[in-house]
Image 1 (tube, rainbow, N blue to C red):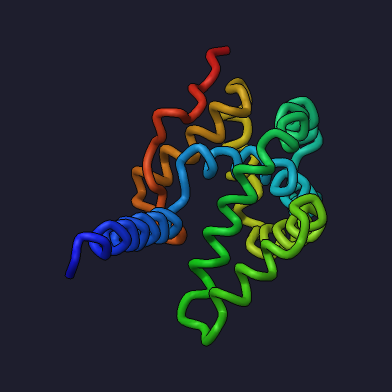
Image 2: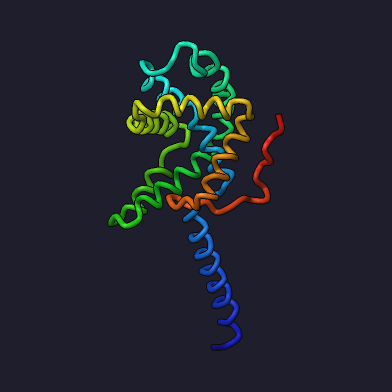
Length: 189
């Protein structure tokens, strides 16, 4: 190989290596994005739990007396958390589509073809239905207790706590890439 061909060959090799590394990184989700997704989905999950557990919760329990104040801090943060939640959704859908013939390309194309804000109502409805379907009557008291335990924390800390627990549990679908040095620090109360 002559010297004129070495530079383009090295450039192509570097590009291929960078693309391979990027593809490997896309197989996991950033810890901060996972935290954002938790902040984003919390109001949806809260509404699903409140509806599913309506006949099982006490009128003087946390969800009835402090639930609206608790969930307001998440509703206020949903717009800010949406980009991270959307990135997690893309990674999750691409990972889920693997193994289906043409699934990964078709799913990625579908997700990237629609404007992010157009997907939000669809995501909200779908996630709400999925969560409501998973809530069993005997878990309503546990859900309420868990919410009451984390209620004093700021929303960002709760999202960060969920991401940390997912890291500790070695979540696989999608896996957590780990904490990013640029990840926002949890706020002290």
